[in-house]
Image 1 (cartoon, rainbow, N blue to C red):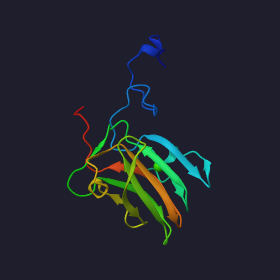
Image 2: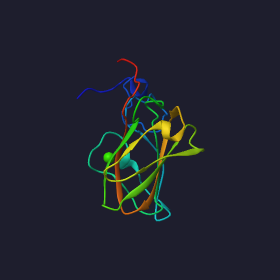
Image 3: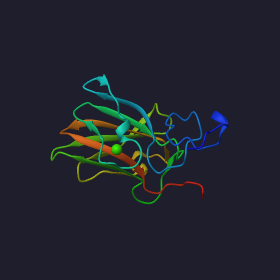
Image 4: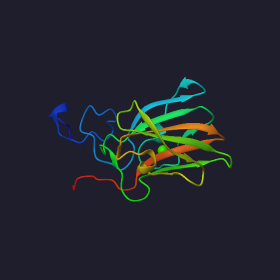
Length: 156
Ligand SMILES: [Ca+2]
C-alpha cells in the first residue's frame, strides 16, 4: 500500500464528500440530505442519497425528507419528466413532492405513489430546481434515490 505523503493537499476527488466542502463530483443523483424528520424527530436520511441501492428512507404520514442535487448543480426543466424517485410503497402510499431553487421556498410539483414516482419541473412552474422535498400523506413510501432524468454534467 502506498503512503500518501502529499497528505490532504492531494487532488484526489472527495467521493464521499456530501457537504459541498470539497469538489463535489457531478452526478445525476441527489447527493445532499437537507433534513429528514420521522414522527416529528430528526432522523438519518442518508440512505436516500446516491444511486439506488435498495436501501431507502421511509415516509409515513407527516414525515418529511428534503434532499439536494449539489453535485449536479441543478435540475433544469426539459421535455417530459425531469426527476424520478426510485423507491417502493404500500398500496395506499402517497407522498407529496415539492421543488425549490433556494431550499426555502417550495412549490408543489406532484403527488407520488408506488407506481407513479416521476416529477416534472413544469408542473411546479419552475425552470430550475435544486431541492426536492417529499411529505408523507398516507401509507408507507420508501425513497431509495432521486435521479435527474436529463442531467447536464460537463463532459469528463
Ligand atoms: Ca438508497
